[in-house]
Amino acid sequence: MAQYVIDTPAVVGIPVAGSDASFPVRRVYCIGRNYAAHAVEMGHDPNREAPFFFQKNPNNLDPSGTFPYPPHSNDVHHEIEMLVALKSGGTNIAPDRALDHVFGYGLSLDMTRRDLQGEQKKMGRPWEIGKAFERSAPCGPLHKASDIGHLDQGRVELKVNGALRQEGDLNQMIWKVPEMISYLSDYFELAAGDVIMSGTPAGVAAVQKGDVMAMRIEGLGEMEVKVV
View 1 (tube, rainbow, N blue to C red):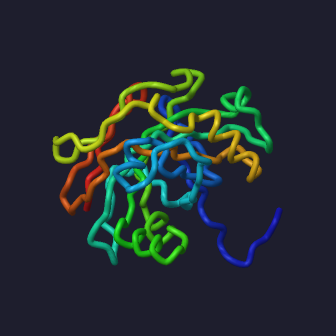
View 2: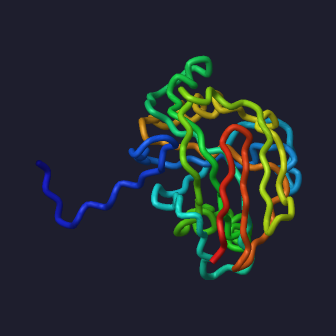
View 3: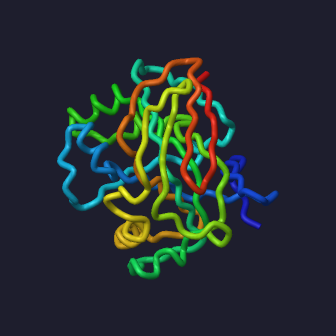
């Protein structure tokens, strides 16, 4: 048995609907501007261009139902996204075989320190300080693809304190799930435990302490997350 000079970090797990076991997370890939209307609201051309990705950390994922408002920001935004969890991987995966690698799907939020992200954009620097902070990815349980099938359409919505903020449909993704998997596998060796956050529709906006975010994606149920 291998020995380590410090205690080994805990494995991050996402609950799985209908199971007592959790899905262990290896890496978290996030696609940017994957819905045309959101690209427009962020000031970008919605035409189909090569996809781009950034990463969060596995321990940013948080199924607790609470989101602690982070320090050093006064402009924290919600972004509802469908999370895709992989049961296997590889390199140079063909789009028509990509869904063979999907374990399941879940609800997630890409919480963003928008003011800090904006500062990094202006300086041409990475976004992690605005994207990969503690507990920045609230998430719900995974639903097995073997139970629900593969989701390529369905209403996406997020309400804050009962008021609708974001709405769209999974069929509005510029880059579909098989294409995202295939593209990533050309640049990275994907593996079991990897997850992909698949982009957000228009309507991103700020939250405050005490707000309750209610996210829903057709086929994946609903989840509430309170800002604390």
